[in-house]
Length: 229
Image 1 (cartoon, rainbow, N blue to C red):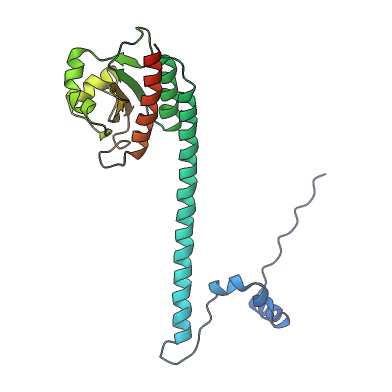
Image 2 (cartoon, helix red, strand yellow; image 1 turned 30 degrees about the horizontal axis):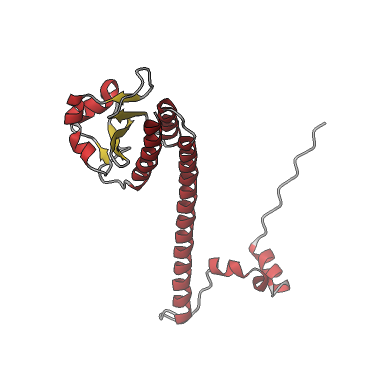
């Protein structure tokens, strides 16, 4: 037989609250945090009490500080998550022994943890014919992509159609925004391309600090593998 639900306690009326406070005059000394939520009018005729005004200002500042602290906590939480994702990617890259390993690690991280939709490594050097998500650039592609290869800065947003089609090829019609990161380690190694089906995911106005960091780590790993081979 199931137990009967216990009735909810009745909400005290004003007189009960008043009687309780009269019997417990030190209540607000023990619960001072409640004072900032109370409104106690200070009668001064038509003039605004200085005490009431100061109390109002302090309450407003207190609320602003609470909001600011909440924002800081949210930013810290977001940064902590991003750091963990980045750490996983770097550790995965450091464990790579082949170009295929690198391509898989990049795809799993940037499409899994960072919510991209497609990735590709476009390399200048010779690569295995059966490599996944790797492509060796031919002479025509090198000439077309020269402006991106000559800079050390990532490019974000929607690329010119010729570059967009060259980089993303069969995925070009689905990719609506992208990022291209030059890979340089003593010499130009190629490009990392990241595509998104969301036109707003990569924008030309966004910061590129994270992408530059990814490019630096990836360039070192690729250089190690290519020079060993």
